[in-house]
Length: 299
Image 1 (cartoon, rainbow, N blue to C red):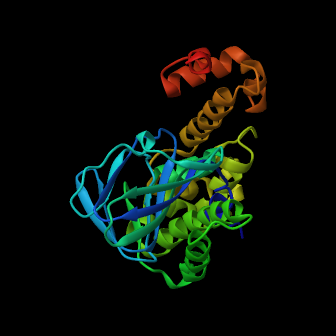
Image 2 (cartoon, rainbow, N blue to C red; image 1 turned 45 degrees about the vertical axis):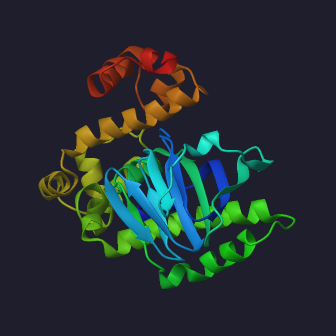
C-alpha cells in the first residue's frame, strides 16, 4: 500500500536560505523579517524566549522548537528591550548562509538556532502551506537526541560545526512537522486527511508522481481499488473538489514551480504535463491561476 503522506514527508527536502547560531543576553529583542516562500524555525537550546507572531505570544523552554511556516515577520524577545530587525545587526558569517549573532545586555544568557528554509518540490510546498501559522513542539521525546546534539554544537565553534548545525536543523524541521501531523486533529482533515486515507491517498500519490498521465476518474478509481461512483464521491468529500479538477490544479501547481525555476520553456512544460499543445496548456493555466504562463515567467 502506498503511504501518500510518507511520500510527501520524504519530499521535504529543503534548501537553507539562512541559518544563524544566536547568543543573547537579557534584555534582548529581535525582529525577523518577512521571508516569502520560506519557513522560519527557532530551536531554543538554553535560556528563555518569547515569540510574537500575528499578535499571539508563545513562550519557549529549552528543547522547544517553533516553526513559522508562512515565513511572515515576527518578534523574539527575552526581557523588556527594543527589537531591531535582525538583518540590521552585525553578524559573523562563517559561510554565505550561516552566521553567528551576539546581541543584547549583560543579563542571563539565551542560546537559539534560527533559520529560514525553502522547499522546492510542489508536494512538499503544498504540505507546508497546510500547516498552522505557528507550530510549537515542546520537548518531544523523539526529538530530544537531535536537540541535544544541536545544543552541544552550538556551545562553541568547532571544525565542521556549521555543517552539523544546518543538517540537524533540517532534521528538526521535518521532525516537528511529523510530530504535528501525528498529534493534531487538524491534520486529519482536508488534503492532509485525504493523504492518510488508504484508498484516496493512493490516488493522490499517483497524481503527484505522474501528473502528465492521461488521468480519468475511472483510472484513478482503479488505482484506489474502488468503483467509479464510490471513488468520485469519496474523493470530493475528503479533498474538497472533484478528482479531475484536482488533477488540473495539481498540474498547474507543478507548472508554477517549473516556470519559476526557469529551467524549461513553456512548450516543454506543457508537453511534460501531458498537454498536446502549448495553447491548450496556456488556456488551462490561465483558467486555474488567473494569469498566463508568460506573466509568471517574467514576473
